[in-house]
Image (cartoon, rainbow, N blue to C red):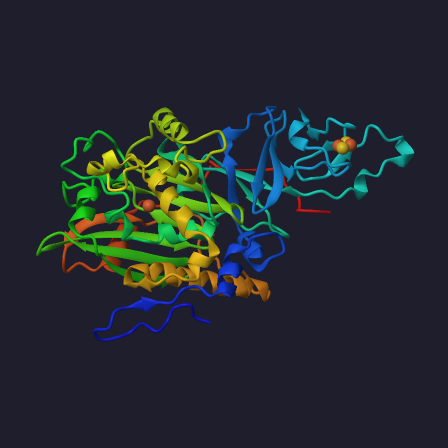
Length: 458
Ligand code: FES
Ligand SMILES: [Fe+2]
C-alpha cells in the first residue's frame, strides 16, 4: 500500500492523492484496542508538565488517547497515573486524599497506588477483603525534560528515546504545551508543511510591529544577518525534499536568497508522533503531538537551546498568558480566533505575533474528516503525504504483530534540525551530516527518573 501517487515525471506538476476514508479512520482513531491506538501506545508519551502536580498536592484529571486518568504525586514525591474512576463504585479519584502509598478514595477509603493496585480496603472486615482481585489501570511514569512521560502500552515499556534534549542541562531546556481542537494527525500534517511559514506566520518587516515581538521568525540564522521571517518572505515556494531514515523522515525546504545563496531549513518526523523544528541557531524544538481524544490533542513543545540558558519565568509567562484554564489558546473558533483585520498590515494572519495561535486557526479547520479525504495535494505537500504513508504502514505492521519501528532508542541520539544560508551548490543532506558530526557527544542522562510502574490492568 502506498498513499503516495506515482510522481509525475518530466514537466508535469507533482501531485499526491488524498487519504482514503479507511486510511483516515485508521490514522485518526487512537482509542484503546484500535490499531492506531496500539501504535501510539507502543511508545512513551508526554502527558503533563512535571510542574502540573506537586508532591502531596491536588491530583490532576487528564484524558490521554480517550482514557480518563488521574495524575498525582504521593507524599514521597512519586508520580502515579491511574484510571480516574474508583474501581469500587466509580467515584472520581481526582478528589482523593493524597497519602504515602497513593490515592485514598473519599467514599470508602480504598488506597490505590501508582501502579493501579488496590492496597487497602479499610471498610471491609479482614476475612472479606478482596484487594488482590481488584482490577484497575495504572501506568509507569518517567520525568524527563520537564515533562511527565507515561507508557500506556502492554508489557514492559521500551527505553525512553535517547534524544539529547533528555540529557541536556535543564537550564537549557524548556517545555510548554497547548491544547488544540482536532485530531492529532492534523497537527503532524501542519508541522510537516514547510511552505506555510511564508504566509501564515509572516510578519511584514516594514511594519511598526517589526522587532517588537519575538516569534521564531526573528531569530538569527547561520550564515546571514537576515531573520528567518525575512527569508521566508523572500521566496514563498521552497523546493521540498525528503529522505527516509529508519526512525522517520527528514524534510528539507530550500528557498532562494539570491543568485549565489540558498536558505535551507531541515526538520524531521520521528515515529510515532514527533516532529522537530529548527527554532534556535544552535538547538531545536521537539514537538510531541499527543491525542487527548480523537477530536482534540496536546502539542508538547520541548526546546533545547544549546548556546543560551532559558529565562524560564519569562517564557512560562508568555505561554501562560496565551492559554485559558483548559490549556487552549484564547483564540478559538467560537471567537473567530480574534482575527483583527486592522493588524493585517503587521502580520499576514491578523492574529497577533505568536505562531501557535496562527497554527490553531488553520489546523483546527483542516481536521474534519470530510475535508481530509477531499484534499488536493501538490509538491509542497510531499512530506505530509509521505509521513501519512509511513504511519499507515507502521499501524498495519503493529496490528499484524510486527514490532513498532524504532531507531532512536540509543542513548545520545542528537537531533539535527537547522536553518542556514549557504552557497547554492551546497546539498542539504551533506550539510545535515556535517551538522551531526559537529555536535558534541551526549553524556549519560541524569535528568530522568522512573516513577510509578506496573501494567495497565490486572
Ligand atoms: S467508591 Fe472509592 S472506595 Fe468506594
Ligand atoms: Fe505553523
